[in-house]
Length: 109
Length: 189
Image 1: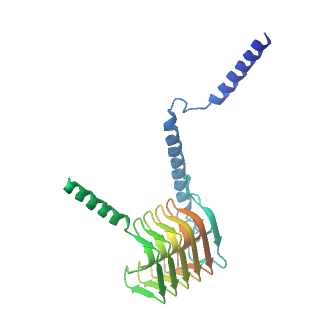
Image 2: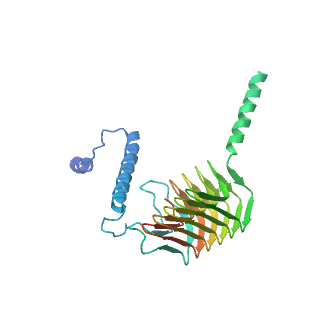
Image 3: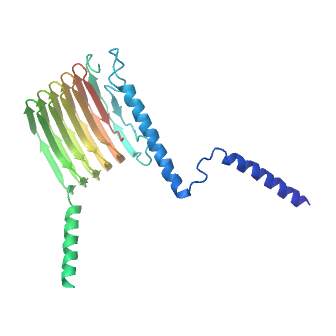
């Protein structure tokens, strides 16, 4: 009798948990092998959106003569995979003392 | 039967030759005091030292360049200096790229100066490689000119792995209205 009660409790708990887990699973009916592809495509789309947003933000300044944020940029030991997986650098040593990137006052406008 | 064998051998030979295209292997490339320049409307100066293109591969090699100068002058001119560079699924591995006193410059309206040292483009890979550029200078001058300096890195699905990138005293500059300067050292993107 005790075992039966425990079983019932366990089933009830599992049912409740599974209901929460499935909530918001829009790809539940999608075949497993396509899920990875869909996830990859989503990442690509998000990267493209980010790129479009940054391009529109950078532009040629904001029209008031102020410089665009990316103009005259210096990047040392940076990583930008644009949302792609597996392109990360590993075991890299970067040493750049006295590196100078210079844009004159009239630049970037 | 004999003709089939011959055809197979010929095909294998051709494919082997194809696989070897664009490779610098077990080699040393050394250049000192080399100068390349061009002047005039839309002129371009391209200086390639230790470059492997189109599935290019630089492996087990040493590229030593000292005092190389590349320059262009004129409206819409461009100066491109590549040292230890691969492109098109390019790879640099198990290699040493040393550049000392490299100078690249472009002058003129809408001129472009691009300097790449130890860099892999387009699905490029830089692996197990030591890259050093001491006193590399890249400059562009003129209205809407641009200067891009890239030392030790990979672009467009690039991978940078087990590499050391030293860029001591590297200078990238642009001058002129609406000009821009971009400097990347040890960057994978």
